[in-house]
Length: 299
Image (cartoon, rainbow, N blue to C red; front, side):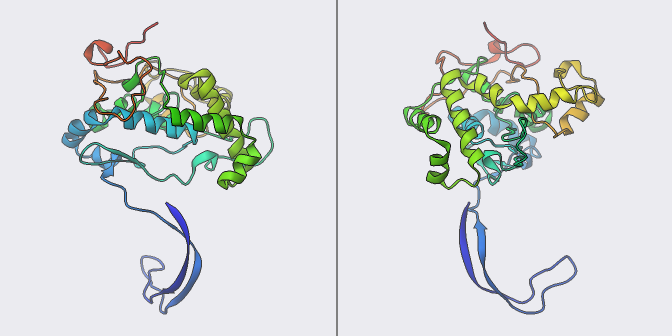
């Protein structure tokens, strides 16, 4: 998407609501947001075509999945659900609806210690609402869980970082937040502050630990609601009513981190421009999962 000033005249007859139209032309001189069309169809629409889903999702390039996970983590995507991921006929992924990145979706400048400055929720990232509620989903031929990035790098979640990304992360981590805000035109200084924190955590602690650290405030919100909801329970510990309550609850984006449900997926790293696997011997497959399709965690 991009922003541009629009000058012109809107024609008469534009709809005002389902029953009426504007009777005359309207002069226009304002800022507009423009978007290019995404390639393919939304993952949610693909899930309505079980045959297509079963054929396409296992072909998704592992490089694309891990890159999407890193993007959503670094830029604090709080709304990466199945309508905001498009899949092409060649199983390429496109991420849309990125206007709420960097914490825009939840941040309010109240000044409290538990400000929701960044509430990550992405179907690519474990320990977040969107990933957790799709983990055992029956939609899309049981394939949605395979978009957890761990299905593509191994149960530890450790990733290798390409040199250019490492350089970029080091810049964000070392740079003064005010300088970063000025350099990139960020709306709020806090967006630069949390970007610096996530970048530094990723470099210092690795991906999985950085995800947990980024969700610390969301976890405190979740813990505080434990008297009203079963916030700390894992999926297998919940009854059906509890599962419904937790899947719909958005006051906190934190969810328990549980093994990825990969259903024996064999990662597709063939011809990848970069192999994000820290352990390049990880090949997935049926021997890497248990009888329920969940990834077997190794020590």
